[in-house]
Image (cartoon, rainbow over all chains, first blue to last red; front, side, top):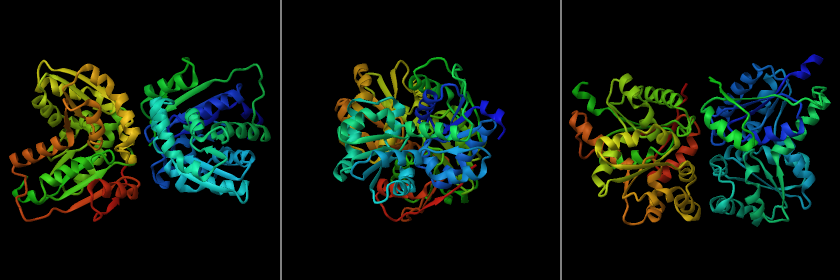
Length: 271
Length: 271
């Protein structure tokens, strides 16, 4: 990749809106970079799809972003990171970064007793990707994974606190408490928005690892290492947003999550 | 359609698994009929998709079922009934029956004070299809519609009772109680599985209209009227199930909802 290419945007892709937490973390860490977000809202949620379907949808999304001339792709979706990363890395001519490796490494550093819990979608949990990455980062770790299918719709409904979120968290997390996790990976980019209730249920002794924040740190490090990081301290990056369906709904949630009214979302029809 | 065609199966289509409530009601009312179910699990949920995307997915599903030589199609999905029925009726050579008209007519008969509430997905509510059908069936009716996006994932998670379902119902239904609905249409085929908590929150004075049951009654009446009803009292109909993704998950839920272990689900890839 030529030197001039550092001015190209970074692509951020998620099955829906959860990736906006990664987008937000990236925009804070790399404020001078242009960012292009694509939410595959026509096919959300990936979490209950088969591996083949997740791979197919992920590739179509990545190709769409390649058309926006990105210099690197951040797969801001745990399900897609778990199931489609090898294929994306094989097929794309730019660096592809996921959310699972960074989350697993951060958990390995954070854990004091070696008991690590992971929560995510059904597909992420079934893939076994987190336990595999954790065992590499922290040999001998005791690991427990649990799917929390209702967390994504809860977040998209905007019910981040209150009795429904709290009761749902209690029910999903009670096996984690019995297991005695000292560290819990929020292995879905929607989950950081529920950090309050998750922390309340798990208690103050348990460290929560936010895969969105960890992914943004790792992306910044990798871009730096590859000479792809844009050095323009005074510049404020431009943001673009695309969604494969229902852009108005995406706009409403994006404004709320990112805390700014100054953005637009365009419709992008995918195969 | 020739007389011999009465032996063909009835197609039942839903975006996912909710239509199994219609399937169950149909199988009880028409035990001698062969039934073919198709759940478009690769594209579920339709409820947060745009109208154009719902129409596109519905047509692909209907064409798949036409390939199974059905004599009639029951659109067991409120969102699809609200948005795609005219197009399906135009394009298919067999009778197409929805769930909205029957539900609206049943509510008009049930309502004593003319105050009718409707709950459904975001797309169903935005379509305005229920209020429109209700005004035809009960001129002068006072109508209030509300979207309950979390009900579908709650049902699919199997949390049909308990504190989460109850708190969620309380929150969604409090505007309905303030409105003073005397009748409430469960305008999504998933919702009958939450009838217990919905009834508890609304109170005993409010009549609940189950769109799945009403749709099955209407389908039986129409097949009879068109001479398409199979008259074979001693015969037990054959059932087939197809899903466009994750057939094992469908199988697990279908066995639970239909209360029988003797069924199989085949994968059907759609465009």
